[in-house]
Image (cartoon, rainbow, N blue to C red; front, side):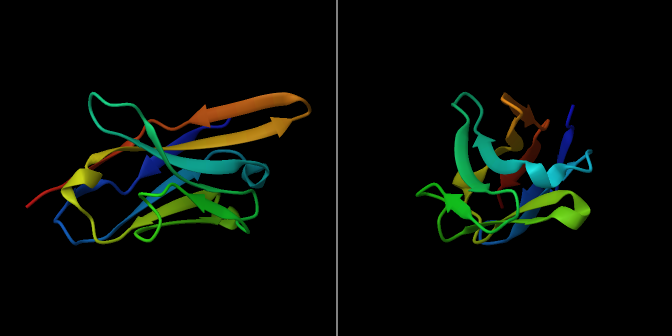
Length: 120
């Protein structure tokens, strides 16, 4: 079973930048598409961005297009989410999710999340 660990969260001032990392345990990490989500306390988890297996295609939700950048380095079993010009509304727990269709089996794995707080 794939294990995902997010890191890079913390307390950041408005206007600052942050890069979150999602590190995976398996050597076949490059068979998974990866998505980033975030969840504000008391609200539904919302999708931010996706990246395909080789990093050649990305997709963004409307709110994230422009300030958020998703990327991956399969040599390091890692996917990143760079967030620029942070706003207090970006305060949330950020999660990565790995997904693949493997011989007819739809597999989906979540990390435990990393907290981002944007505040003065």
